Length: 157
Image 1 (tube, helix red, strand yellow):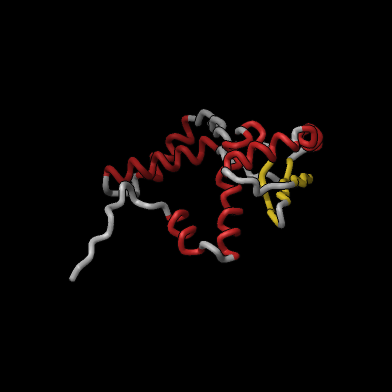
Image 2: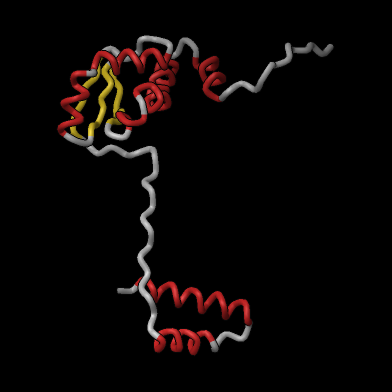
């Protein structure tokens, strides 16, 4: 006899599944603590998160690296607000204390790429590139090869 289980409304997330499996174990607390890293940027705001990132959590104390002295000083004044925002995002009071110290901060947002500076090639260089590419028989491959040599030369100072 086959029993049917209730149908899921939506697929369960891995976090929810792990939470139900680990319920009542010490690992359940570690899973909750790991959510701090997930909610940090949104909870405290992208501007602050660009200068301060969590690095450790132990017994209610969250250690945060801050990338400069002025930011460290400013965030010290905002310590209570930051704790409240993180706990609100977690939907429970996990963070009791915030310990901030100077350290490297890995930015979540990639830095915009700077435009690549290219120099203008002389007629002699352009002729040399064409000469080098002539060794390739296939016209498409020759064009790619020529373009690669040209870009390489344009970037040389």
